[in-house]
Image 1 (cartoon, rainbow, N blue to C red):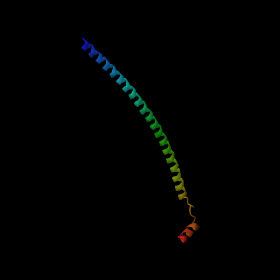
Image 2 (cartoon, rainbow, N blue to C red):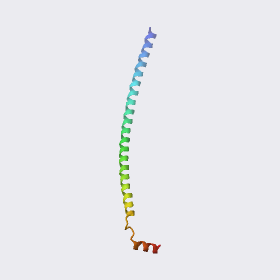
Image 3 (cartoon, helix red, strand yellow):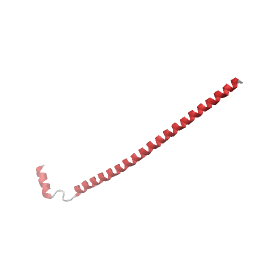
Image 4 (cartoon, rainbow, N blue to C red):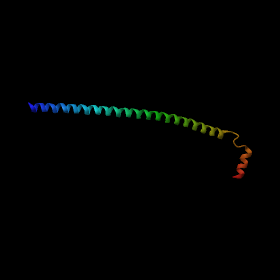
Length: 90
């Protein structure tokens, strides 16, 4: 009878210990998931900001290239007199 009571007591203690371990694991898992969600949100925000900056850079670079191309295509870029002087100097 004493052996059976002792075995039941050991079983109850093991069950309590298992429940404590399970609860602790659930708390740890919830903390890890929350941490991951926060980091993912931060990364997404950073990605969106970098995308916007890249679009602005692209737009400014395109404007620069178009302005330079327009300057090259100007008919009076070098007048005939300047062309002759440039050829003599070369």
